[in-house]
Length: 433
Image 1 (spheres, helix red, strand yellow):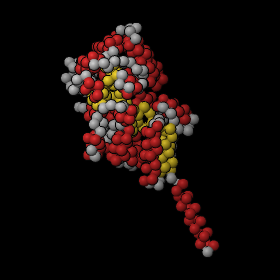
Image 2: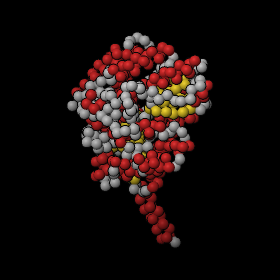
Image 3: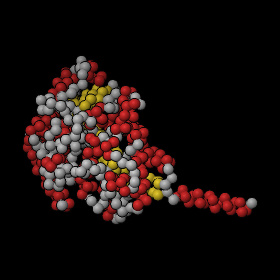
Image 4: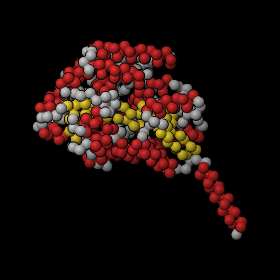
């Protein structure tokens, strides 16, 4: 009996040892709240699906904090295997060549099946090399759309959502006549009203293919189209057609309270609006200027992707590759897309979501995907790859605010933003050339 018990203990210890032998893969991310809980759920599902690897998700704060923490950790040789980096950090990650392990190379060298053509090109284009190779794995991608208050539209006798900016103006004036104080407000003004405005009309935001062509790029968002749009928004700010609400997504409060009847915001804002709006709302594509383009182009993405960092063992990288393959599964992507409101990153996840009837049951949730897959991405609509982009956006915000306050005209503001932004690009170029 004693020998039997001893054998049982030895076997038990052996099994425990094999369970502990799972190779740990650390994943730093910036997803808080419900999305953070979902990230933990995804990691647990992967861990439960096999016993060779264990992904450990670690919340490190907002996007800026997460990226800063990863850089500091790399210098201290304590970096995670995977880090989530927002899209404006792409150029900085690319410049850190000794720090990153390109995803296409990782998947090939780890022996994981990997076909880049199965991913949505409008999403992956932001994170590919000049040769079209994926450098990081898209995870949470979104694009701006227009939300509108159907109840206020009905009260004002408006039956159609605006498709053009000209229609946004006439619609807003009708709404004001019916008692609504503000036509529309916006979140993330640089992203929506300069970066995506440029993409929507297939005009460059910067030279050298919006930065994809190298470090010597210069900003060009002070062209006729952008100046005309910002000038008009300055006029709208005075008349109440537009109401500025801050640099992030504070405009949501004005939309929820029905102070503003329309709201340009991320497609990933859908869940929040659905939860907070006490009225019927609709979702339509980001407007374009009629007469400036025959057919609007795709918008570009926001959100973040997963970067793999150097300095880990071959076995850990096999775990990373296995996890990225798992994340790309249609069922996993469809679930994340439907839960979060972020775009699906693969064609299969999009098809699965459609086949499950999700879009039919949740009108408007397909708008971002449809808009992103309009036509074939061009050099002007593939995305932006600019060094010091976080700081450049801060400059743009400052200069746009000077227009909304009536202190300077649109041309002067955008000229100043370009000049200040170019100085930041040259600083980045000197540091990484």
